Amino acid sequence: MIENIKKNKKIIFICIVLVVITFIIYIVLSSKNKIIGESDTTNYKYLKKYDYNEFIPVYVTEEDMVKKYLNEYKNNMLFDIDEAWNNLNKEYREIRFGTIDKYKEYVENIMSLSIYSMDVDKYSVSRINGNKVFNIYDKSGNQYIIKEKSIMNFEVYLDESTVNIK
Image (cartoon, rainbow, N blue to C red; front, side, top):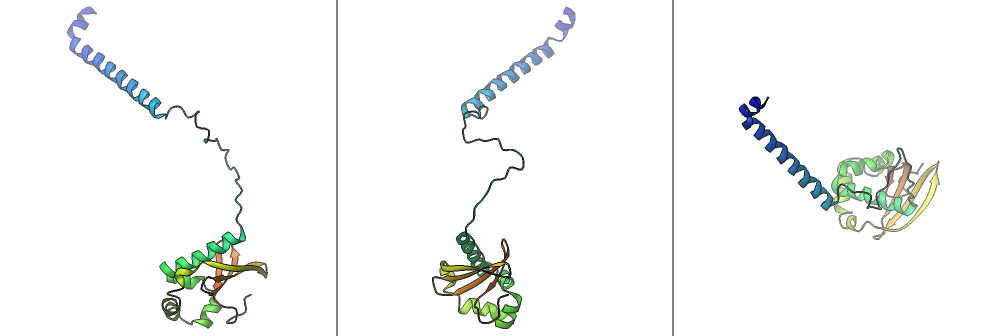
């Protein structure tokens, strides 16, 4: 056995050096984690173990929804005019504008200045056939009637006189 060790002393020496280097790397990395704090998460009071399917209630006011719907419609008019067209009630848009080109013209010409000031000034909420209807006036005096079918599924009317809101 000693003769095998004498024959293979270069290989044994290389193995010992590799083991020592691996051990040194392990010590350096584990001390680095302790300095950074990655290995000890018990000090963080803000960490919480959540259970699966935990229900966290979120309360959204009508005012929050009014702002969200108006901003959604405003962003669609600015950046996705086709989606803004689709937000309009189908019957309303066909009677009021007829084609999407006339609606684009309306947005570009009439609304171009007031789009940027489309912030809620006042609003009221009512129910029509079980749906919430938000009657919104912006700071420029423009009226937007938003009929909520379900959350973030809504129709827009730009006045009350063109069609009867059902």
